[in-house]
Length: 197
Image (cartoon, rainbow, N blue to C red; front, side, top):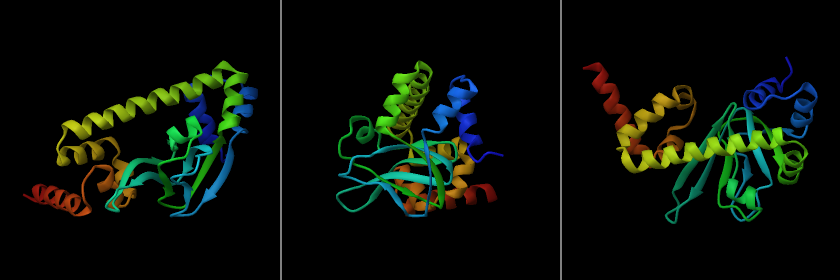
């Protein structure tokens, strides 16, 4: 099987393209292998790429004034990640994006993406659909963080991403959910205790 077949399927799930157009689209991306803990973006530098995770796991995060890491987003197989504000406006970034495990990613540069969008409305539609899904996801996340308790946020995370929860480090999940690692451990411990009763 072609190693890019998962990406080809991902594209075709959003837009219907001829084989020729699909090949044009896919070959605009660059395949990279990155190691665990390797950064692909960091604050004060313009984010040059939009990144699709072929296989692996990454996270974006900011560092607070107290030195704490606050996870903004995860990306595992078949997900996208970028410092989108930096990428879209070609301004210095605010996020770190690092690999949580050895990963293979596909990246497209800003100029290459603009050329694709200008070349064919179907390519532009692909990126528009992605932007709409991302906006909807971030809105749901903001609402959850404002209306749910810590326990409810953790339950929602487990229900929505059961496989992801198993492979991500606890500190990263805790910071994504807006709590300390110790508090997440307590929630998990209480959950196990309730099951045993």
